Length: 78
Image (cartoon, rainbow, N blue to C red):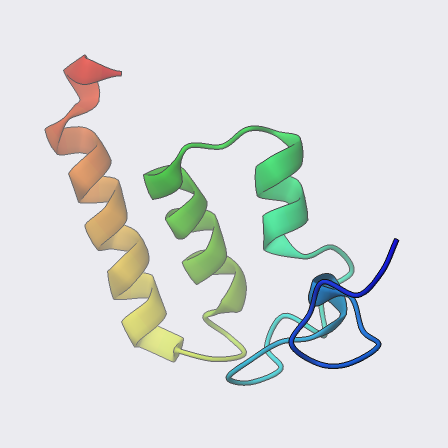
């Protein structure tokens, strides 16, 4: 299959725009999220918690908590 990335000759999963915080991981968050059909807000929590040590520090933890609060607010709808 051909390139699906804006970077010539590379697959989209081989590149990262805006840092390299996911490159150090053995499995990319999107791979886990897609394989397990994780809903949007829960996927955000996983991404932020996974990268907080490498990228956004406390701000990423706050973003994860915000997404958890959104899940709780609408929990009865799930």
